[in-house]
Image (cartoon, rainbow, N blue to C red; front, side, top):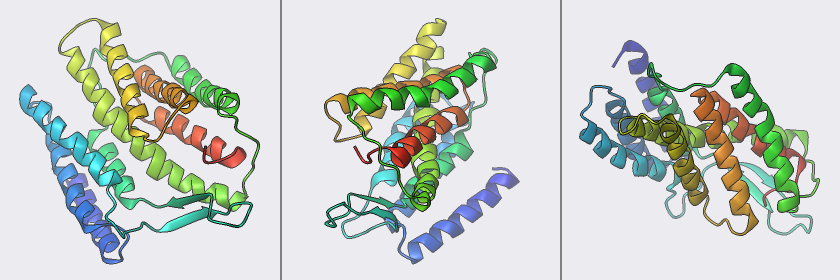
Length: 266
């Protein structure tokens, strides 16, 4: 552990302690987050035995998912945004600040930001930029008729509040998990089994797309295919760039356009 990581670790511990004390984060998640940090630091070691690395990966993935999603009975994260129903009954949408998910995403981003191998495939910058430019528009354009979305602009203050959670709790955390922990790890594993470039890149992309759809529980009908398209394009942007900022940006823009201008939630 270097000095930068030591300072980051101390700051993380202080933040988590404060969140637990004020009741904005479950203490169980605090313990789980500490486990995530330890396992991630161990997992990133390049000289680690292959089978030990597989074992650590098998432990790390469910632990990350647990910390990001577990909410004890009776516990609630701070409510940031609530949109009222037109009828004045129960809110049609509420957004809570899941600090566990936010912090686990930041930890993965900080600890697992990939060091590219010499033989790593990276497309030209023009292709990287093109997919980042076109993907959000394509996903939203297809989703509007398929999901029968209607024009429903939100207030500016609601857009700003949603953007904060969308960036850090949704886009950053989910893409750090899907790309840095899953897709990049699978790419590295497959590269050790075959020299076929198509297999090295396409197999992890397809597998992680399936996982992306699977973890969004409650999907049915046409929504499954929209999420599959979105997950595939998020992953494709990472395949072409090996830069986590591209899928984070695309994911953020898709969610933000959907919330700001269209009927939300589905």
